[in-house]
Length: 226
Image (cartoon, rainbow, N blue to C red):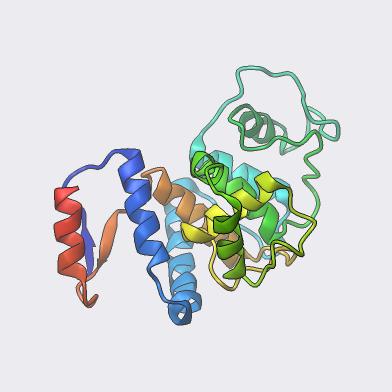
């Protein structure tokens, strides 16, 4: 039985509390928890936002889904993407997310298969966690990336900013220890990220845990006094 929050929280407090609870999940239970949450998120996304993802997911599909959640509209209609035309199905969503600082590349490459790494970068910014990410020093980056078996010192593909973003995504529970950067993002993986975007933005059903959790009473007490 879910235990709901009894009073509202500011976005930052909600984000921090969610991060703590997500990060507290043990490695052995991460895969099962992610699977369960992805199913719940999938249903919620379909019911509340009419979002249904395909098994073969493109980057553009994910961009549209994220923008359907954020409901952003670009005030500046200048086309900042060299590979997009106005009749593209991704056009409006891409411009809106670019204006919000979620997409920054000159090329969207919307038809290419979405990777877990691309989806994670988009989700982190859509969740408003980039400011947290950019506080990460090198030692904290290394510790976080090690959780997904990435040796930061040996990986030359990640810029400092990209490494910070991925590290924060790992520590806040956006992605689990099952994360594989270059692997195509499955429907389940994408649904899980979309659900967490909803959670960090305060748009998903809020609960601290279940009545079967050993520390549920401590969680309730901590949340009440926060």
